[in-house]
Length: 222
Image 1: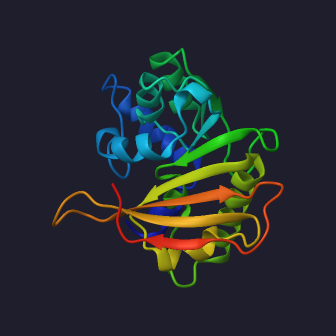
Image 2: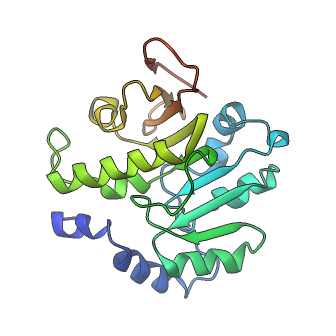
């Protein structure tokens, strides 16, 4: 894709056209950066016990099956947001027992400190284009707004899971918020010769947190 096409990924009009075209294939889904079955061992290990009823937010949910899959694991308190009203209507129709909302991750109409868990599986990547070493000002502004919004809506001790193929030396500078949360990177291994994915986990500091922020890259994971 050329730069113009990549930039379109950051606008709802592009995704509305894409999801409208997908209406011809009933039940069609688009999974970015690994399927639920591949992520399931990691998520079951890292997510809170569903019995604790954590409030969860899916950022840029698209038509992924992830919210429904987690619902099948008894995570009942989920909200999924996307700026495409077309896909939100589709998903409301497919999974009416779940909560869906049209919203922009850069300007979320959600309360402060209202979620325990946030999950991004492809949304941030749709905002990124240009040089990974020196992104355009527009990219930096959009990412800054997005990251700050996730920080705002997480409760103290809440965690943001970001799944991507992007390398830590490019991504970590965009995600770091010194003194606000800890950042851990885990490689998601899927066998020899497979594409490498990463899970970035940002854990918001509790009100009583003291000392230095943790910034750790774990060599391998589940």
